[in-house]
Image 1 (cartoon, helix red, strand yellow):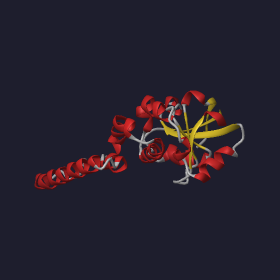
Image 2 (tube, helix red, strand yellow; image 1 turned 45 degrees about the horizontal axis):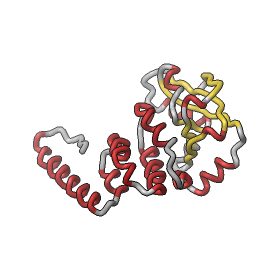
Image 3 (cartoon, one colour; image 1 turned 45 degrees about the vertical axis):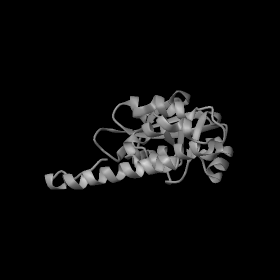
Length: 189
């Protein structure tokens, strides 16, 4: 449980919320409602909760829930090895990862795709899993925190190397193993 309440009088509230969340977790586990179990965890802990329970999930639920956790993750590059393991899993029903529209759009992409990544700071952050088809979206990500110099990277990849394509947030997101992105160069945001 993460709470922003810092005043000592709010301790009882936080403790009660934690007790309630633990009860809900126990109930969801008893019902084998793995979506609820994992979503009861705070956003930053969902990947670990998923990883610990992935063997309990039916294949279609595995992919559906993995996509939901990815979309809710902030800074997935911090757990790059785990994400790559999960996205590259040999698990049937992979189509459940994306919507019908996303699958169709991915199918109709050219064999070689130009992708963009926005980040702050060093060029090392240009080697993440989250890219976009939109240069404008990459620019927004590059400037959203504005703590360091914004950087937009442009790269090329083969369509067959794309692990997922998500459009739900309007980001035209390409999920890819960073090692599969070629000819990366910095461009103006």
